[in-house]
Image (cartoon, rainbow, N blue to C red; front, side, top):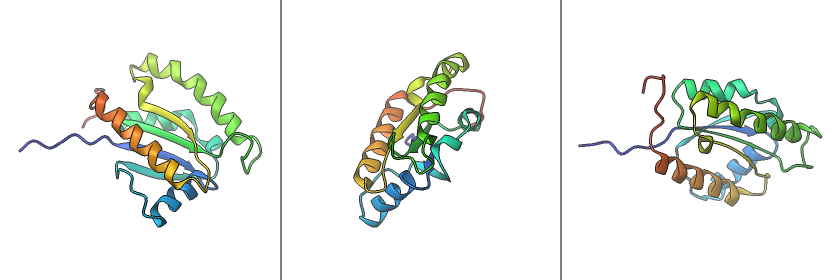
Length: 139
């Protein structure tokens, strides 16, 4: 019996908004795929691009960085740093041979449980269409 491919997603979620949005989805019983492994960070601006690269090296099929909407950051400018930092990472992912579609930056507030569910669901579907990531990491 063949095992159906399920993508492995690592999600770096801002503690103030995106993590609270994921929590709201859970408490409101809004279903989303169980493919995402959540890492709670104080601010999306604290996610180092090397963390993303390391996730791919360790066998992740996709990486999601989610933070507060621009202008609503609890650390004032953290999400602006996130946006700039990861805009620069995308060409580097091409250089490493990792499809850009395997990495996402999204803005999800604490009151957007349904949006969090939609983000994870659409990202999972996109990764399913891409298939397993081929790379140096052992699967």
